[in-house]
Length: 321
Image (cartoon, rainbow, N blue to C red; front, side, top):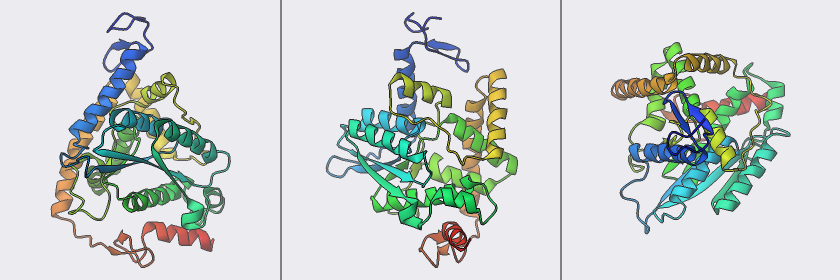
């Protein structure tokens, strides 16, 4: 199998495009798609200057997606005086799992000369995910607790680091799965939040002080291509599934998408493209007609429509279990 660009030996075949690509052209293709997404999303503000640079905080777990994202951002903006990159890693307290991925994160950030901050659930919430999974006071999958805690830590520390953008390594498969899950549940408000969080034009921080704007520059790249890119570039990614992973519904959606993609290449791209348009319409609707009033959490001051935000409610439940 030869590369369609140069005739060298191909390392992959992209069924959705029909292209066979060698290592050089494949890696170049991934770089190009990520940089195009950064450009199209307007990630770098035209007002950023060497005297007044933007701070981009990268959620770095040490897995393949966040490692590849960090590598490409460092290659693209590492010497750009308009951007300061900071990696943020979270230790959830999962024995035999997170330690190895944090080692990978520290190795990568040292090689790239990027500032690296590490936060732990133990320090933030006085709990460990191993203990949460064992007690399960709310009768939920461990991922449900961890997702709430992780979002809270990312948002608070991005704000504390004075970030202008918060970047995460969600790939095409992740986003297409989320799109289908929200569509199947008919959750228009969640679609609207998805648009506000990662798809729409980035708001001015002076006009939007509730959350640091998010971006997902890998969302055009399939998961298998992210993994291949990490392998070909010999990146220190820790590719092991969390021992508490139990999102059964997402797993069903993942299998469904892979089956449909195999029969109809390009399905994931089509789903995401249509979902972005639908999410934008949902966002417009709920911006104009949303009666939900946000106050502050009685315990931590976070924006919430309840007395306690979801994070504080779950932390309290865990400690009382």
